[in-house]
Length: 455
Image (tube, rainbow, N blue to C red):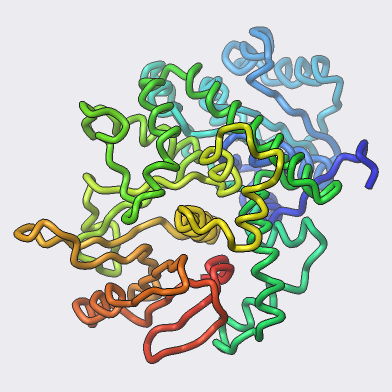
């Protein structure tokens, strides 16, 4: 492969963008939100390149005051505003045939406010890219009005199917979907092949920069270098942001691996700081979630079809948005370049703490599939012990679908059976995600880990 060639990965979000363009533009702008380095800008620019006669990208991380002021002082004369953009970016704008991309919009909320005026003009289409982290506080502080004429599109790291596309495999995912519907086993050879691809996906992760680095020569060291640069970028972002306590945000981020390595994987704030209280850390948790760096799961006390009605605000789990990044963060000691940990995970030899990577990749698959992360833990307050744990609760029509993740060869389904018994009127079938092939046992279906991507 020519290393000078710019690789652009196929993303499912492109079809959603086409739907927006055909059905909702120019009355509505499209806000593409996601963590840094998930490919938002590349996706927007590819869309501009292929779906419009021309496009301009206004990057507010690089834009000078002259450009920024166009979206404040220039709104009184839109003809002058657009001609200024054409001159500055040396690109001709065509009425109803051009796209304006407002990149890293969270850095300049005034431009987001300007969209109301720009959309009323209807000359061009608008895509915003960025993160919601801190933007609410900025807009309140600066008395900025956020336009209601805005659609949101979340961009996650590549999901498993997108990763398979990247490595040239368009056959596996349709097969996975078919086996989900029939519940028939794959057979040892096929299952082993898909598990190998899934474990590669775990190690490389879904960040486009890491995937492209791996693709060039199937080089884990190159992927490792890309992931470390992303982690360092996140750390710098946390230090430099001033919307919430930067130390709190950084401490939460650095402690994600250690908290996930525990048996119950619940995040205990006193492990971060013995004096920590949820009231102090709530904004920082929200910052990591809004930045889409972390996927936060909330405990549900009394499950119902409306899972959000009985959430316990005091209990939560925090997963990293990308499992490849989690592996690097967990083994952040510089020894990765010998690929020891990669080999261990690829060939199921790690054993120690592998459960945290498995549960994290399942959470990642579920979020990419549109699910909010909910789990259930029941505690006997008298005996002060946990009596029931279910890793994930999903909506399945009017029923709840409980999902357990098992990372060892020897496990029980005691909690899952107990949960289905206690909430029999609200719960449908149960799912166990494990290392083995598809099988059914009464009302419980056993799926391989990779089928989390189609739940």
